[in-house]
Image 1 (cartoon, helix red, strand yellow):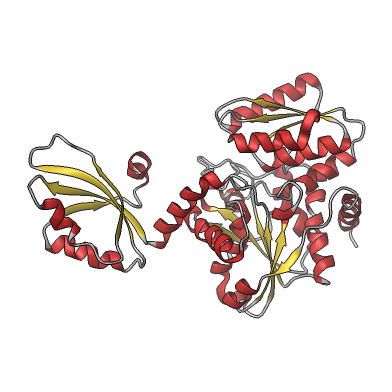
Image 2 (image 1 turned 135 degrees about the vertical axis):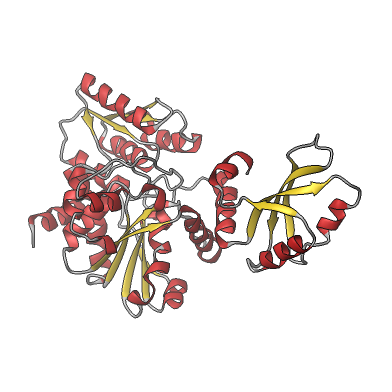
Length: 408
């Protein structure tokens, strides 16, 4: 047994005085669908609905002399730090972007109570991070990184310790979401070469993949924050040192819109509420296909901090990815009966979800933004063929990011 494995097990034992192990549950629906033995490591069922409190606990238990902890986070790390500040009876100052949803601010305050102070600073996370680090230097507090800290990595490895204990052995394959790499670094350091790995990132925040290509951590030019629990602009130096040899073939990226289909599937079929980052590992099963057939696979569902006000957006993204909802701009002749002619082309399963004139002063034609939902993506081929036959001019803008941003 390595020193790291011994330390990770000791951290896991110490955690039992604070919170129980999260369940490892076999999922019959996914097992049947992928012809494999699929298990979910339910980190979404921790006291703060993510694994982040593990690293915070381990770092704090090793530093009883630290009077003040400082962190920058817009989500799960903030809640984990707040929970542990209250548990250990130490003070914490948590910097969050001004744009952080009230739900996350309130939960962080609830977990930390009087032990934490929340400071809303900066419109973007980089601004928040700089403010937190400056404050930390001025007050001589301890800056607790969400991932790039050896004790945090060791604490996150407790997920792997529990999986081995609960399964009774190492899984054949483990699928782990990646943000800054703390959980992944902990798991690979504990399991070693005893299992097959898939490390999964959102397409708009694939910092591990970028680092593997460059051979070093690199900063992404742009980050899509939809999967905020894994949307990190640069992987940690310490975490990448442990992940540099995993190979590009084991680093998967998931389009954010496809991720939404899995979130809805888990909610509607299983009654499991997952945040976008928490659904990454389950969604990756679609890409692994035959390679996991007949094998024991563990998916780490890393978090369930989902604001239900986002559900309409998740449904919208899922429908667009599945091809059952489209938006287009139609040039509609300004004559009596033109709208009726258009409506007559809709099929029995087509439903208008949006209808908005964009130009109301045109004399001969008017531009109309139309959103249509249907039950089968193939219905659109029939509908567009009817539009062409009847001489309607239109532009499909469903996948046009610029137009969609302003019009949809």
